[in-house]
Amino acid sequence: MLLGSISNENKEAAKEKKMTGFTITMDAVVALILAGGMIASCMSLVSQESHTQLDYISEYCYDFLTVAEKSGAIDKAIDGEKELMNSMMLNSPSSICIKLDIIGDKSALSLNKSCAMQENRIVAERVVWMGGVYLARITCSYSGGSREEGGQESKTR
Image 1 (cartoon, rainbow, N blue to C red):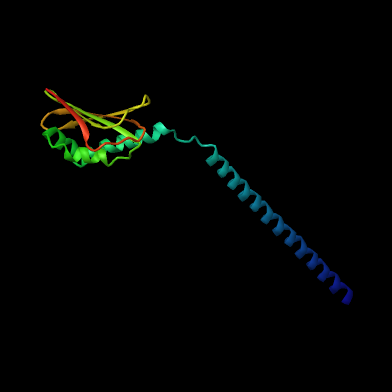
Image 2 (cartoon, rainbow, N blue to C red):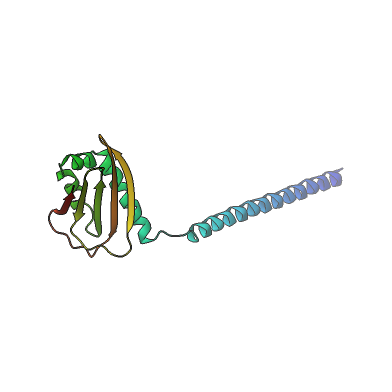
């Protein structure tokens, strides 16, 4: 009997060793899957298309026009109060040149930030209602960074 009980213990020990090997193998498989997923996600991030300079200035141009409309600066400029719009233009980054044209049925207003426009320009437009239909057209480009106090203004009737 003693011999039979020893062999049963050996069988149980062998079974435990097999199960331990199975657990270690499963851990390795899970680790490989996780490592492969992390490498794949890193590669997809690296291979994504980057933004160009025109993408950034386009976003800035649309954002400027939205803020000018929501803050009432366009409405005030149409009424003849250009201080808020000039302030917004002067507080914009020195590397961005801005020209805003507000065109209505009977009048047109043009405000410029004093700088030289480059060839690559972004134009954004928005229709504004203030007792009539007005088209607000903003043209943005990168500039050499020259900035003067006050904006240039022209008005036609």
